Length: 425
Image 1 (cartoon, rainbow, N blue to C red):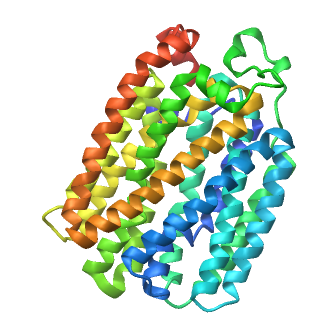
Image 2 (cartoon, rainbow, N blue to C red):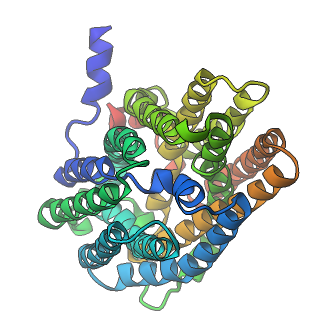
Image 3 (cartoon, rainbow, N blue to C red):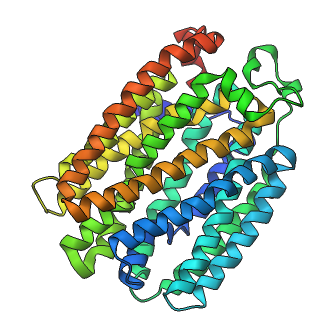
């Protein structure tokens, strides 16, 4: 038993130094990530927006964020990804601080929309930097460790945010800004971009080699069709996943009234606790699974998890639902995060990641609009059941893409099971 525990955590030994810096930076950032998990509650309880108004605001934000993501991706591929992260993080932090200086209302809404805008413009550069600073064969472990850091910080951040929500919302904005800039400093000083030419032959992945100067992102995606399909899958995944921060807190507000903020903060912290406890275990247990098989299992778990909420309003059932949801979240991440990094040329990583970010936005925004409509016209039971239907469709699409991907990237499937085991151990 002890040996198994040691082996589970020892799988993270021997990674690039940058992987550990990113891990620490993620902890710091998300320890202060009080605002985004509580955004729906801020809009509904502090500012007074209705469900439909929140949904429409999400549509407007999405329309603004779509071109911003494309611009962010292009900038990430043209200029230093570190510099892009620094500039956009500083701007984002300034808007967070501005939120702390005003009362809840339309001006506050404008400020944190702007903060989110620049944070999302930075996202393609950050995703590309993770791939730039790590070796292809260690990606599962790197993304697993990064995700672990994200949730280790978030576990404390969400609970603290829930407690600050009622009386100290301004402080939450300030702390969010301070932790963001602190993690940015860590990345500036200690994350090192690796030179592909320095890799040994067995460490290289030819599909990540730079594409020609005149090759467009559309040409890349046309040639590598499975990337396109998986970007569409990301849209459906976001449609389902985003409901934990939209429909779930609204449902809890309906049931628990004034206690909803604190109760939701505890459930969100439980999500992070499960990630911390089970990410290393799932990384180890699913070591021999191909990326898209993990995605299918993950989608199935978190899309069906909402069905646990049907027929009861007991507080404990939210923890059961969140446990199943989080297992799906972990497994989906272990498959989807390395998938694009191994199939997109390094020269186009920022732009490909921006398209994936756009898919997340469209899926998340579309999910809020559709779910908001279903909730208002029908019921939460109808809305939660619909998520399972979307999940089944997404799983079938991934199953089709599995065969497409094998044809386009055959060398990624020629690695023996024994070799996969060696890479994770």
